[in-house]
Length: 151
Length: 151
DNA sequence: CTGCTTGCAAAGTGTTTGCAGGCCC
DNA sequence: GGGCCTGCAAACACTTTGCAAGCAG
Image 1 (tube, rainbow over the protein chains, first blue to last red):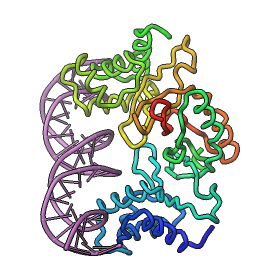
Image 2: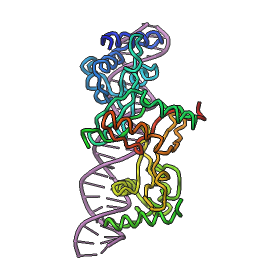
Image 3: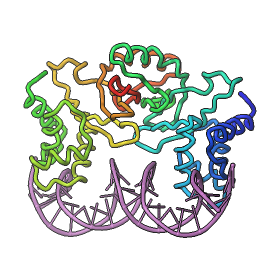
Image 4: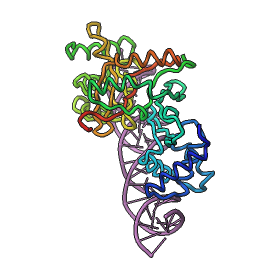
């Protein structure tokens, strides 16, 4: 795991490199996402970003998340039916790819989110690509089920 | 594939057996879902049910779908971020299980839904159950990706 | 008749958008 | 200072809920 500041800096560097502006809102979103291992929904991000950028508006958070998503710095995952959750996906050279890229399981009972290495989905991805020409993007969806604690 | 009427009758029988009332709205919903192989969202069901039960209201469709879902007659799947889709899951004795139970792929580009046999997910389900004690419910979520046509 | 179901309207989530002003570069 | 970003408010899409009237059993 790289030092937190490194991921924030790397993200800001990408913004600059792509000619996007480094604004208070975007910086706050990146720092909030960097500060936790959890998956935050837009509401939680608004709440935490308010401490770093007083007066931030929901709509601006959504727009910042969309921009960062377009740049590949943030990935969002749709939880079964409810709010989408977001997390940083900055590619640092020294970071193992597996640490960044993961798929999600969500418990339909307690709503807990469990990360799994995306490699677990590789055989499935290979099969649907071979059989159907369908290229899976496993990061974007949570698989529902019942977690060990809730059974 | 059993005759369409058989699935409708079987569903109505389950309703009666459980002491639930057989109403015009519920009957219309079952017939609409039985009449197509597609996955319909609530809006489409409202549209088609209007022909069978003039004046049906959205809210009643949602309530009927909830009731039928509780009885296990209808399964809903959350498509990445957008409206949930519904389909009949009546267990007829003469129906092969695989015909009923399937998982879903959705193209993030054209939003087409592709059914895959749930068995394709078995190895994955076995692995997360063994490693994490997580019991996958593959019917309830669509996996996102890019379909062959959109690449 | 009894009370579960419906229709209606309104509220509740989660997210997007048009516009005028503000800040980054 | 030019133009992208932001705040605000309103709209939007999907779903749920409170209430009085209606129909199933």
